[in-house]
Image 1 (cartoon, helix red, strand yellow):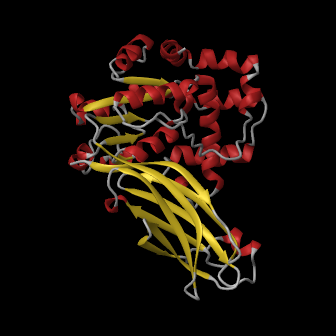
Image 2 (cartoon, one colour):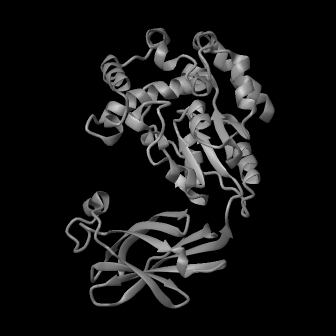
Image 3 (tube, rainbow, N blue to C red):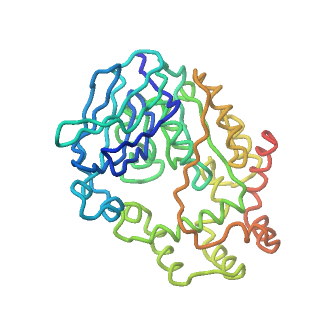
Length: 369
């Protein structure tokens, strides 16, 4: 069964005399739908809903009822500013293959309307010949690739949550459901793929990163997760990471010496972290890891992410041009990556600390460079 997909060609924003201000802040293609969000503050009358218009006909409507704190603060006192936001999923079942202009109209309490935006989109039929299994190595650009997968394929990210009792290599809950998806992505081990999925059904894909850069990003991520100990991110992170995060947030390490000591004391978490995903026996050997990875359909490197994405698009025979969209979940990093990567002492340490990982990374880096 073919599923309709879409590519966003352009988004035009409009404002007029009936509106104080408005914004369409997110337009995202998803399989069989387009997600749109934004906000509207009316001038004489508050806006109450958004009409989605195709070829002069309203095909969907969404209420304007979501609290947008920044808007409420900026337009404090104006009727409708407190809950000025909207979200809507435009169902592509209402379209066929072709190019369309989708109009977004604000509807006010006096029944008048005002155009706030036009989305130009191309709809196309597509079904991949093979499924994709993406082993998401932490802090290598996998979030950006997940966004690409979710835009074009039907699947699930963070499939590690389907592990039985959250134990590695102990099987998956809803395994048949996972096998039915066009893509599976997660912080999953190669062993788990081999034991639970048919290799011939899948394109096996992963991304590696410069070990020194990955080391710093991994540390920044671990410190970041305790910024809110009530958050879903913190609660679903292994306890060993939670404890280390809280401890490092108190210490606030800054110097190269302090950072090196942290890596040495926590080698079980940081040392050769990337290639642990691909270990298939008790021996950690660079040539064995290279051999395992050479059986993959595609091994990318973060530093050549655009080339990786182009190769993947060709692999799945996607009928549109690929689009690079980089997502970065790390905010306010504690450790300055740029200065640390320019420190010869740290680089020398990283090359010795993650020596096996460097050998594997440099082998696949040569495939792109």
